[in-house]
Length: 346
Ligand code: CP3
Image (cartoon, rainbow, N blue to C red; front, side, top):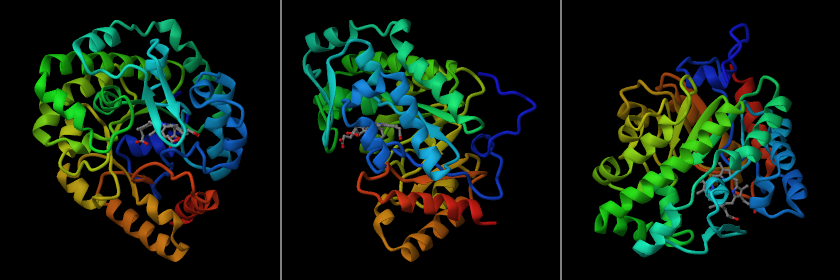
């Protein structure tokens, strides 16, 4: 959706465009989730994937952390496997575990079965409705749309569920490059369509989550993963900033930029000044408060926040976020305190 030219650009979008703010805007990955009592109440009677497909409920949950914390962005309440579900794939999200597939891709027949699924544009209607309702409620606060990157999705699809080191996916990538190419191209199509639908309905930025890309060498990433991620990102209508995030990606940041990202999300393992140097100080960064420190005493967390903001000043612009998602056990008051701390710093 084109921005209204008379509107002042929200701080998040200014930072994503590379414009340094007096104070970095702030939001949290997984800000809509179990750390919020109002989220737990909203979800009490509804399974995760059903909640994602109920526009009114998804919109309400998306707006909850904006209301409570005053963050500078909302991110759509959904999941990386939602577009696969909408394509008819038998997948569920098991509480405490994550996405589980009824038919993991282990044989050529499994792959043929998976890629025969098509994501029809009409199937995305509940997502578009959730985005439209959310945007209506958010006023000037921008909504971020998102999708899973082909490698991270492939790791779930091939394993059948969560895995520690993405072993089966990395085996397939080498053992059968043709099958790997078909799988990741199909996933790129599905994730690209999911991103494009969210933007058409009003999302003003997108983030591609390649949470497990850090399992790859740079060579394997560039040869066997980057082309599919680039394809997913290329599906986003022009002019909409694209954030690319993964964990353990210190060796991959330039490659992740080369996939077509405008902004790079960094996890807690790499200080932002080091990340910025790897990107020749040309790319806005998002990150990278260690989620573990959310449970530390405030003075310890505050010292860490200072370090993150100071290191972030090395980049053209910085959006304060965590290095990964909000742990469900987080005291939500701590998140509000971080937002207030950031907004009141001059
Ligand atoms: O950031 C946000 O607030 C937006 C919502 C969001 C969810 N999942 C909601 C969710 C986003 C951006 C995601 C992305 C996602 N999903 C990723 C990439 C980001 C990351 O964390 O690395 C991945 C790998 C998944 C897969 C997934 N879905 C996992 C591992 C889990 C956790 C399972 C569990 O119970 O611990 C989910 C479920 C999920 N997705 C929840 C939420 C709020 C928890 C569901 C619940 O409340 O029971």
